[in-house]
Image (cartoon, rainbow over all chains, first blue to last red; front, side, top):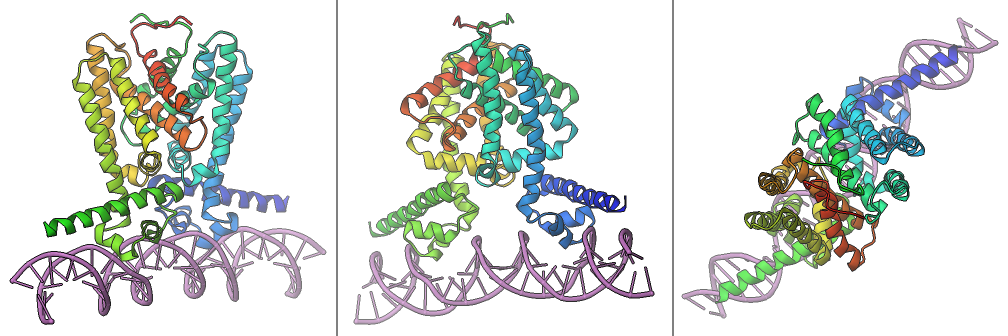
Length: 208
Length: 208
DNA sequence: GGTATCGTTGACTCGCCAGTCAACGACTAC
DNA sequence: GTAGTCGTTGACTGGCGAGTCAACGATACC
């Protein structure tokens, strides 16, 4: 169908602009870049950006929401399973770290410009961000009920510490404070879960 | 001495502007506020702000550095002592949490506008921020040598997780995601150290 | 009392950049 | 081939806010 071809082309252009925006935002930062930089990167005219998005902000919103929904879906899915808490948390950490591995620019933008940008987009998307905390807290709460995790740490606090550790590690990579070799990235998944779980487990399991 | 009186008055005015800036930055955010807001809050003329500071940025730099130096000094002091690692970490967590308790605006500004603002001031002050990580890593490294903490987590990683947990909790308070009662704040110190240490300790110590 | 110093004032400038808009042209439909 | 739709263009504008500056006035010093 002809109109479909046109619709498809339009969708592609939108995607093209979105991808260019991610690159530019990651490279220069959201505030430091101009809309014309995005247009140039995408190879389209300035005005076309405003044909597909109503504002510069909306572009970032779209980038964030698209990916964050995936994360929420993944966590909910993991939560609904009945694997041990440790495995569930490992799945979540793996998903986020793999996301970074596959698409560092998107994750950099999300973390730097949204998740950690508490006074601009972080504030706007606080409810969505909080949803993720809540879902992680649910994982912990269930595990506590089953006696898998110690109950004297509130689920909220545990979720904060867990997500905080992940975000901190990604930030470390983004700013080259930590090595980014494939091995280190793989090991980080385990280290995060270890560090958090062995602080949450009913009984310490290690014997160095 | 007369000239001293004048010098003193000048220093006071500078302080006045600095304090006003902290209030305004905390309330509206650094980027969202205008220099005139700071001047208004301080009750001085617009131009006077530029008599004491060369730019809007310099004001924030000053706010950050003044407080961060205190933190670095405290950590170095703690590190040089020979208390158990757990106590050292508790001292550091306490210091930061007490700072927030005593002066939430300053800490909010530092965290929101500098420490977590990875693309603006966070980047500028990365070296200073890194110094803190490094000092904490030193505490961990020493404890590992003494066999007090497990050695299979790198000090860098441990420092990141520890500082990350603290920052995450403060962020939780700043955005009202966590309760801010005096008891909760006091308990948080212990919970942070617990969560991190029992994930770092040679042997898990608890028996719920 | 006169002069120099320096803290203080706030109206103004100037550059920047998000967002607009009028016009263009490619493709579709008939 | 003609009319209509809609993706595309980029020069332009409008507002905002950081930083300037010329003048003012209080205090110090002789």
